Length: 186
Ligand code: IMP
Image 1 (cartoon, rainbow, N blue to C red):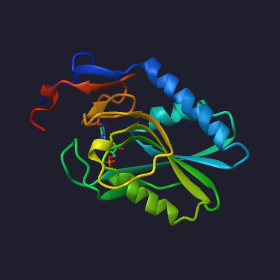
Image 2: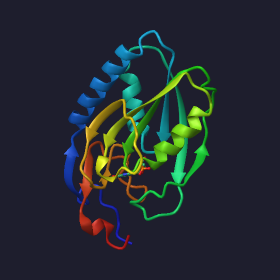
Image 3: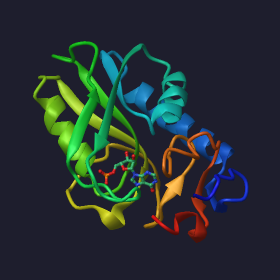
Image 4: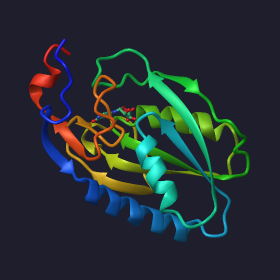
């Protein structure tokens, strides 16, 4: 197996650390305005959303509670999602009657979020909205209403700022595209 090289494996930087910070600040300001006076619970989906959640919650200026879920999709290649979702970590607290915002790193086919939405709606929140840092609409298989969206991206597999390829590259502070040779053998 080819060793991971954080610096040389990246072909293009799509969004710099500064561009991400600016976008997260805008989203935080919008959310603080829209949810003022409402009991907002941020639900983040590990592991990819970890940096986004950490930055977004600190750019929100109204009181929020947070909760974390972890899901993984069954089967498929490393760069594909299958739509079958397994819950590895469930919510810690009840969301009944609460305003919930799902904080997601990326929406690709939409299958993961579609499953999660149905699951969380079953817990009777007051309402659920979605905040996604990245939206890859070219590959969407189910319609998803993204109330808060960071960036729309083309159909490219991206890494960094929480997003992985084979569990690596999550710690890159920017979002980029890997060189094709990194995928060879996948
Ligand atoms: P979906 O179910 O196809 O919308 O995929 C959602 C999940 O697939 C995301 O939460 C990511 O974990 C992963 N994913 C989709 N596209 C990418 C990508 O370009 N880079 C890294 N992970 C991705």
